[in-house]
Length: 483
Image (tube, rainbow, N blue to C red; front, side, top):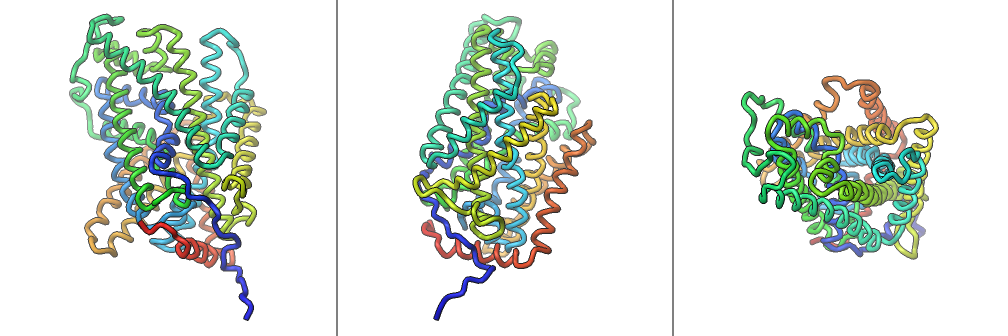
């Protein structure tokens, strides 16, 4: 008797190749976090809020991210899927929840590659300006260059793509380490621009600091970890994914926490822990560049601008790869156009989905350029949209994890994701209230509209719930690595 394929069945099954080992999965999460880029932009606000104790913002942030990550780790240890939370939340909590989480994550990774392209433009312009090569060079050609590099790297087979990501981040990371070591050496020797010295005061809160101020400062540290979850989208390409993906999430958070805290300690000491030093740090437009000029000369500051460009390449490549795999999973399951759910036979890369991501981001950057929007505003506009959608996904995923763990053998374990929900909710709250200045006050509504579209799709598109359920069940049936 002939077999009939019903609309509820996925159109295309996975042909992704398992070629990513543990170190590769770790590299994905660290690369998308882009710690070099994060340290170039996120340290100033904690310094303004906590003064000399700015490093504590990243200590608390690392703890908070660890609590948020716990739900991801437990779910990814149960199920691996190219759609990341779309798959493992759907597996644990049902197709509607899986689709919503996947839709929220897709909103992030459709715009995050363009954030990195804007980062290439921002720091590329800074390099050209500081070196005198082209002080007034327009940002759009630099963004196009970033687009081309990211598209090429992400389109290669996953082993080569991840190798490129590792190279990008190692080069930029090394330059920051050189600066940090130079600052410490000069502090120890006493050969410093002012009266700075090494002190434990960086872990001592200024008198009168309120708990709410610490929490707000930790919000900015928390955002530096955005992307730690990205390895989850490589669950069908990693060897032993139910071990390697959870390990990669913890490793990325541990590495980021150590790197951020050390960098913030050294930056704080480099500027100085007295009132003048704290003010200099809190008002710096480019703290790493300012420190490089003070301790190693303008050449090192130029090199750090290049390091931020290189880090942007790596982050963009990782984000584009994650966005492509999210689209691939939705296309494969018949939720979106089936062509998105195909891969190139020669290298196992979802090139149609990748082409969609890259075309969308190119169109967005072009529209911003036509409108005359500066690169730095493009960077923060898109980053704000992506981050808000990501925070909603964190909350929804931890809710699914709490329910899943609550029905298991250790129901008290469900309390950890509940705390993670509180942490992510706190961060989300402080990103929307007090109401930010225009046009940032519009972004919560834009993200809300995106999420509402996802809710309406799963509620009213005929057969969508069944297609999601069938796709997740089919992926579960072909899981080749139960470990």
